[in-house]
Image: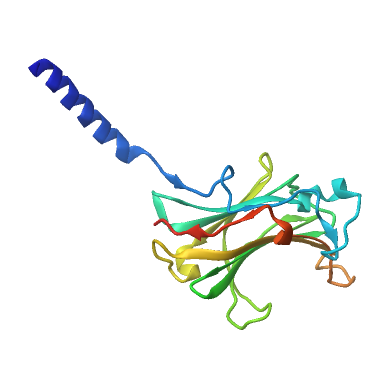
Length: 206
């Protein structure tokens, strides 16, 4: 009996020492995103459907989500997945994720064009309308998995606390003539999340 109790005690000690080494990544994630969009729904000017969708899969949103890591509580990760992410694009491709936190609106953004992609930006809507105050941040283009991820310092979005909610989450993509061209800077094609299958809030975990 004493031997069995000793074995149980040793097992419990081993488990206790192993558990803190586990890195917990909090939902959402690719399998449980905050936004699940409909695909093959890129529209001309954002509202006119057309049949040639395969040409614009790099702007076709699949999903978007937020995540945190237990070992990196100073950052919030924002990800958007498209059908076929391209490192270089013919048109200027703009990838955004928009949300509201503590009554302030924030926006992540990154551009891609024939020269490549970047920089990664986080903006706070301080003046209303479409005016944002921008900061650069870290980010990643995962071409193998078609995912763009922004690494947002929490102090750039008002230092949210555990339990704060991100609401009105809205990913979007925009295709326009290149910024350095002499052509009109208007959005020709868009994928907007108005028709998304799922849009839910995200709760800060750390």
